[in-house]
Amino acid sequence: METSPEDMNAFWTDDREEREERAATSRRPVYDAVALLARCGIGVVFLAHGWQKIQVGVTATGHDFDAMGVPAPTAAAVYSTFVELLGGAALILGLALPVAGTLLFLDMAGAFVFVHAAHGVFVVDKGTPRNGFELVLVLGLASLLFAAGGGGRLTLDHRLFGRNGSPGRRRRTRRDETPPPPSPTGDAPPAAPSTRPTPAYPVGDAPPTAEYPAGDAPPASGSPVGGAPDAAAPPARPRRAATSTPRDVPVAGPKPEQEPLADGTPPAKSKPRARSRKGPSAKDS
Image 1 (cartoon, rainbow, N blue to C red):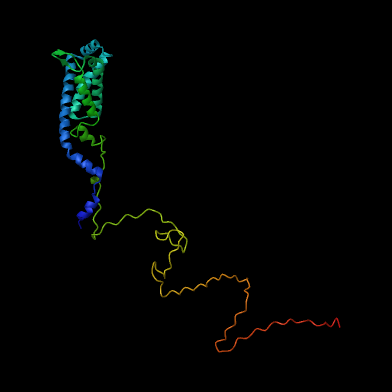
Image 2 (cartoon, rainbow, N blue to C red):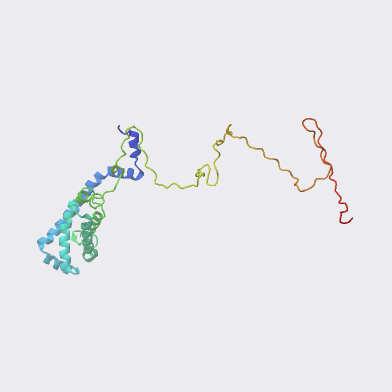
């Protein structure tokens, strides 16, 4: 038997986080396309600069860096040549973006500090080459953005490693779960048994409930809650009204007369008890 749409809707109820994720996913294709174009443009610029250093030669590039005042010019020339060449290709392919973007950002940060910061913003100002820092600033910040995850989903990283950047791991949603199988009788699937232990009570004691908490005994089986007592139950024995006069306090006044018996015979009057005097004993006589 097929599961009803109501059961499926109850099972696939989306929470607020999933609704926001679904709304963001509907806008992702446009962002992914724009991010791909940006990666390709920035990658082509880095590829061109790295290939230019290869054509000139790493040694000649190191001499140019030494003339500009860059510390460790030979190591800086080797680093910038291969990072710009391989990093530009990685940006275009979308491969190892966190690593490639970070290395390219460090390359541009070194160029900004040691070469371009002292020459102003513009590369060319009023027709005069100034060698400013505008180009290295834009390239460095764009590389940092790609390293932080702004490269979009049209990348090899997303294809190989999934959404979280690790192989075989992806955020689990309700769509990854398996819906409960439909019951053959059409009823709802049985609930899972509770694993909560049941407290033990002495023999003859009932467990406490919300209506009768612990310490209060529930009513007898013959007397339902809020109703009249059962007809089969014996009537309650009336209790004697308490008197205000204690028993050990004598009451002054004449004694009440006793009522005649049921057959009309007057009640017997109690005779005063006579004291017997002992006469002289035989020993005294």
